Length: 331
Image (cartoon, rainbow, N blue to C red):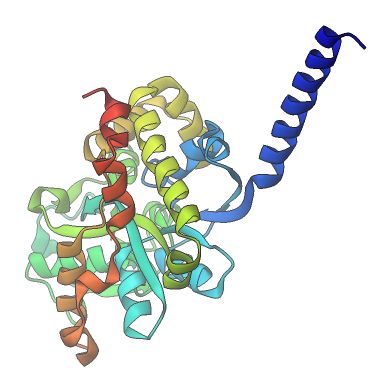
């Protein structure tokens, strides 16, 4: 074989070996999202369908787990090494001794609206009515109780709250007349208003700090596989950028996962989350502190808990300090 032929053979062999090694090096993981409505869980959908997980060395299987409590439970059980959850689930798990920590926070305000039957014109009209609720400990359940309290209505005495399930189930119950009010996020609000159910309370306008959606993992994973956690958060941050800067592709992915076909609803949700998704998604310490204050009324452990111990800022901070986030957005 000539030197030219030999060199070409070595080059091909080297490329083949590199490709094979890269494929073998990919981490096969299960990761989860907790909302099937557009668009709170969108960064995980973008990371999967836009090839961003693959870019950072993951062969990721994306699994839907309804509700933040179940999402955190799956992480604690080891079924999901790193995935989506929300603040109430984390606080509940930590107070029970669970080894779970927040490494990112995507929606850091309480992004809910209380919608109701058209016959309910004023907040006081809610008294004596039946409300559709999610399971205890979820963000929707917290938001509904908070909404009612802000209106001066005791959620235990003045109304009847019935556990229905996720947003889709609650909206169906509202349309069938099984309940007269519930809480929804931005996408649900658009659907509710289109169906003739007006907004009674805009929780976003109140600006309540809250860990609505974020990325969680175990302390053990942080200690033993910080490289995996860092690559995951890197993919997550890049997925947020992709969501904000690739509208048509993002809408296509939103339609696929949410199964919402109404482009107007999808665009409205896309625009809202484009504004509220932070470029550097730090987990919100103040939101966890607010949760602890709420829980302290029924759980004395919460009064002694430190919200800062529930979050790990290092992974997002490293991406910001290294210039990674700035480079994504070109500023």
